[in-house]
Structure formats: C-alpha cells, structure tokens
Image (tube, rainbow, N blue to C red):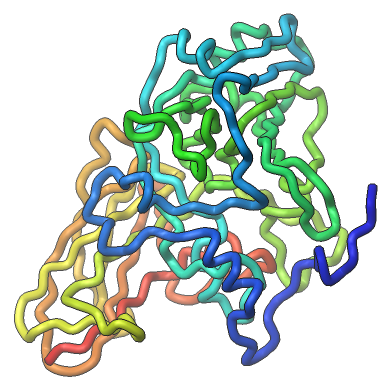
Length: 372
C-alpha cells in the first residue's frame, strides 16, 4: 500500500478552540450540498434539492457497459446489467435519507469534516429490485454472514486508498423490514449522476453511508467485513475511548424534526422576520427506528413546549411525516426550537451528544426569529 503524505491525507481531528471553518471544509461544502429548508414543503424532494454527499469523485458511468457482479458465498455468481435488473419485478419505496454527519458543524469542539448544519436530508421515491430477490437468484451458501457492497468511487481517506465499501448483516440484506433495494430510478426517472447512476443501494431507516452509490459489486462473506468505511469511519467514539476502542457502529437514523423557517430571511444572518400575531409553523419529522409520535415547538429555550401532532406515516413508513402548529409571535427576538419523539420513546436532546466523528447529532433545531 502506497504511503500518502500527512498533508494529503491527514488523520481525523477536532477543531481547536475558536477555529473557524477552513478552506478544505469550504471546498467540501461547495462539492456537497444540503436541502434548502424552505423546500421541506415538498413531500417528495426534487432530485436537485435532495442532499448530496460524494466521498471521492462522481464516477464516469455508462449504463450500457455497467455490470453488477454478485459473488462470494453464492451458488451461482451473477453479472447483471441495469437492463437485466429492470427485467425483475420492480418495487418503489418512499425513503427519507439523512447523512450520518448531519449536525456535525454545530458540535463543540467541531469534528473537522463536511460541515453540515441540519440540512443533510431528503426524501425520494426509489425504484428498483429488492436485494433479497437478487440474492435468491444467486443462491446464498451456508456460512454467509454479511453482504459487502462496492461502489465505483475510488479515493484515499486518512491514508487508506480504497473503493467505497460498506456491509450489511445478511439478516438485513435479505429481510423485508426494511426491504433493501438495488435502485435504478429516483422519483420515476433514472438516477442522476450525483445520486449513484446507474445503480445504488437504498437501505430504509439507515443513515446515508449505508446507501452505497455507483454500485458495482455485492460479495457475500463468511466473516464480518473490516474495511475502512465499516470499522474505522462511521463509528460512535468518545474522547475517552482509547485508540484501539472499536466504538459502536452507526446504523439507524435518530429522531429529528425540522421546521420550514417562518417569515422571510436576512440574506447573511438568515434571521427570520415575522409580524406579531399568529404564525403558522410546519415541517417534517422522521426516525429510522419507527414512526414519529410527537413533535413539539418551544419559543422559551425549552421551558415550555407546544405540541404539534405529526401526520401519520400512512403507506410510507420509511418516509418523513409532516407536522403543523401555530405560534403567537410577540415583538422581539426569539429562538424557535423543535424536537421529535418516536414510537420507541427516543427524543431529540437539548444538549449535544458529542462523538469524535460528529455522527448522529440530532440536537434540536434552533431558528432565530425577529418579530417586528
């Protein structure tokens, strides 16, 4: 393995006290983008507004020459083109997808990486073939414990040259709750390049790192996968954890509610301007652990909360739920807070749950408002 200079592929770190967002972080933020919060009004996010995170490069992809190779502990190795996959019975799932690092830039100290605030999310109708259908076609051999997914994007991270690879336990890969998809369409059209054209994985309820884009390989293995994106990245680790501590894996999305910012904004500060009196508030809420059962809004730093019951999940159990309520605005400055609670009793915190990677930070959203 080639060694890379530390200034080319540095180790992970947290920002020093008072350190602002750096040029490298700004470059990441320019390549990737989040959902404009006012477009939470769309139940299904238009592809150009859905959040995007690209670890390395968007690969040059030709659907005509693309092949998905399925191998490892299978009875019949497969080599499938997108046209072959389109020949299987298709299913469509509406799925909310959120980056595991969403909220990272609001942590203190700040883990230095893609500087997300709260906007790394989107919801789409994904069409494709259930992964379990393809694995059944290949025939799973005894002893297989995980499925490893390889994307065509290649790069170096913390000194490790790699294709982007992640794995899922076989029980998740072959299960129906959630039903994992090999997707080839987004909102009824072929996947856009930034969303994984021509094939990607969709794992309902899991953070975005599991939804491997530009999918070109599936390998069934008889031991847990130990690749970089599985055992080094995407782990919950605290400052107190030693260098050899494996941490806990990042998997399902924690509950989160987001508000469509009310009124109209100042260009730079994004402070919202509203008039005195009743102000309608709305937004979306979701959890990877099940439906959201309660959404609450506070205008007094959490001393009191107004309940805004979310809409039921209906037929789309892995998609976000809308919510509405009314706030009576009085002259002055206010911070509006919103939080969600899911059916398992998980509630968004008022204080950060810090970890070294900045993952799963579902601290309540805070929207500054000036009423005048």
